[in-house]
Image (cartoon, rainbow, N blue to C red; front, side):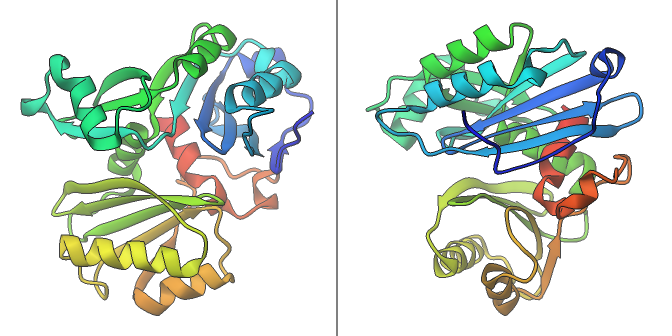
Length: 284
């Protein structure tokens, strides 16, 4: 049985509370996360994060099947379920240039054509952008079977939507970075427009510094002026945090929005670990 790397949970969640709640499930190649948010009082009831190491013996789809089968909370009825795919094979297309007949060609050109996956699309609210992305058919089928009434989003789409709702500033350019154990998702907003949304793999702090400094150089961002908003699996006193502060003057760890009730259970872990996914659960 796969155990969560970390979890927080309110005890004795009633059926009534479940039916007032939105379940948001995030899947990426090496992790499975879900949050249960009571929408009546904006209180997170559960946050669970599973670190995965897919292999030939236990591929990603089978690891997820095992988690879903053994986690009793995922079987209980909820008000609404949102399934979020966090895979890098994605392209953001301006609305005037979007056309359904070129979606597969765009993904194959940008990300290669060795994987003949399922192509999905969605319009991103408030940004005049479409997201075209590719996922495994087996994974999508498993999610459809496990969460029959679930609605689907790509992580990039919800990150942009939540940024507009909670994090945007008309006066500052922003580099938002969400860290995982082996990768980071970087979003660059300059002049109120999206200039970059990309997933970068990293092995150490030097990789992180290289990618972020390269983003600044390529996109003309001033390291001393850009607001760097950091969330995910990064500790405030870590070598990674020290590396960020070495190169950027405005580094802020992401906060839980004031609309979300910070419970005693939430305080057991650094709030920036799951601030982004909770914002997504609110705005989706």
